Amino acid sequence: AGIRIPFAQRHYFTSINIGNPARPYFLDIDTGSALTWIQCDAPCTNCTKGPHPLYKPAKENIVPPKDSHCQELQGNQDYCDTCKQCDYEIAYADRSSSAGVLARDNMRLITADGERQNMDFVFGCAHDQQGKLLDSPASTDGILGLSNGAMSLPTQLAKQGIISNVFGHCIATDPSSSGYMFLGDDYVPRWGMTWVPVRNGPEDVYSTVVQKVNYGGQELNVREQAGKLTQVIFDSGSSYTYFPHEIYTSLIASLEAASPGFARDESDQTLPFCMKPNFPVRSVDDVKQLFKPLLLHFSKTWFVIPRTFAIAPENYLIISDKGNVCLGVLDGTEIGHSSTIVIGDVSLRGKLVAYDNDENQIGWAQSGCTRPQKASRVPFFLSRALRSQLL
Image (cartoon, rainbow, N blue to C red):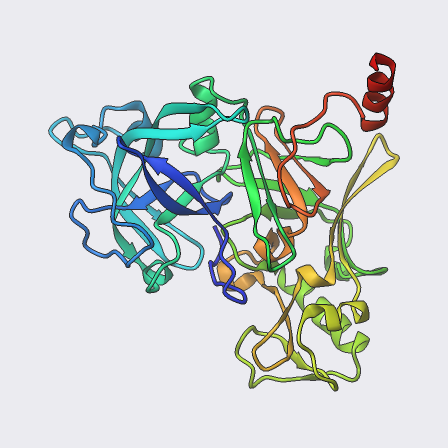
């Protein structure tokens, strides 16, 4: 996962219920990592005050080293016969980390039909956090791992036959609403989605490749990169979007050329690149018409249909407390992604994004993200025709 910094204090988390009796925990949704962990009184060495009391495991909930989940997590290393627990440590791109032991407990889910379903869930009982994860007070109790790794929540649910290995999220652009997340394919639209294949790599991340990046009609890929494919990672655990250094500097040059009345303000530490406008700005709505969308062009399907991930100005610009216009796209070298695009929360807003691990693909469609709708199996115009015939 990338760096979790709140932009305008907006956090994206969901509530899950663990234990018997079930207790709620707020978890940061992270498509960039597999392991779910909850701050845990085991006892805790380094925990921050979260919204709920620390999870307290019973002895029988601690996962032993010979368990298949432990061997999966530790890479099938020789396990310790005399040890009574399975230790884990996970590090993030912002150099924060979480360490603890694996636990197994009951997780309560509500199905699309409103029924309650219980499952066995293996997760990290986290008792030692480092770095930004110790920011206090925390808005969450831990992280929900949603990557395509074997330990992720969707994979565990799919292995138990509860869902197909598909999930999605829809983060609203409107600050007054939040959005929703779903597990399984019931809420994936059958029509109107743009799909791209996911590449299998050593890391459990949702990675694909893009052919070129444009600012409006202007291509940002510099000459050295022309014709080369750039890796793209979809990472809801990252607050911001990151571009490779060359594309990042090219974007800044384009923004400066496109907004001559704006002066760069290096005294504004909100983000690395902020511009002072020559008129008062209260929200992105006041300036978005002055900027163009960022367009990620993927390879065409059947040599005809173009596939584009469009990031509107309101999904890459942030207004600072000083009333400056700041760029929510950062230089990827800061997080060790010098040649990779990382699409974070700021640019995932206003889209329903679905991750299909069964078919190894990611899809998206524009959405207001107000509430999930069960997917119709036939197109809307056909369903209307069928309904009118039935009536």
